[in-house]
Amino acid sequence: QSALTQPASVSGSPGQSVTISCTGTSSDVGGYNYVSWYQQHPGKAPKLMIYEVSNRPSGVSNRFSGSKSGNTASLTISGLQAEDEADYYCSSYTSSSSNVFGTGTKVTVL
Amino acid sequence: EVQLVESGGGLVQPGGSLRLSCAASGFTFSNYWMHWVRQAPGKGLVWVSHINSDGSSTNYADSVKGRFTISRDNAKNTLYLQMNSLRAEDTAVYYCARGIYYNGLDPWGQGTLVAVSS
Image (cartoon, helix red, strand yellow):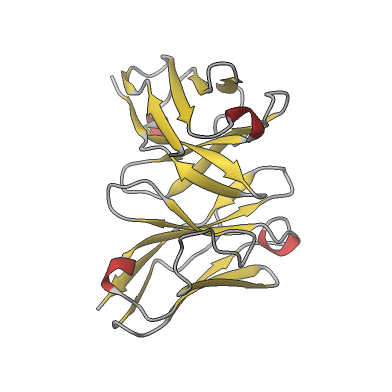
């Protein structure tokens, strides 16, 4: 199972919005509404930010939102804050009844 | 508080074996699927394996199939990963995580480092 494709990095100024894409195939992202997103700060464990494409777990800021179109899912961070600087990974359920992660995106707050 | 704590990592020679454990607390362990995910130094997350709530169904990434075995003891609230025939490319921090909804993983443990080297 090949990793989902994400941009290596995105950046934005405080208050701006950034969007991270996550491209897969019809066997993963495009075939199921089971895409999740994770935030990982350096040296820390990942944290679930979005599940089932667009749902936020309790406690996650509503500045984080998810969507999907075809084989590409997206995570948008609105009102960018310094604390949002981290690595972000998407993940999808697959037709092999497994999970696959994206390549990861480093978000930099300018 | 929902908590996962991994243990069992360390330095092992190529071809060797290691068993990781993940102790769960703060939730009804037997109700949830569980996962192992690894992250090589400076690299991204890679899903390794999952097991269903009663241990009757498992799945593995192709890279570890036939070498790693996931299991669980619901009486002890503990998840395991038996790793055999270890290779240098298995060097990584190994995280356990609880499966929620359909493919959400939450929370994650703090991770345990496995280093395969001679």
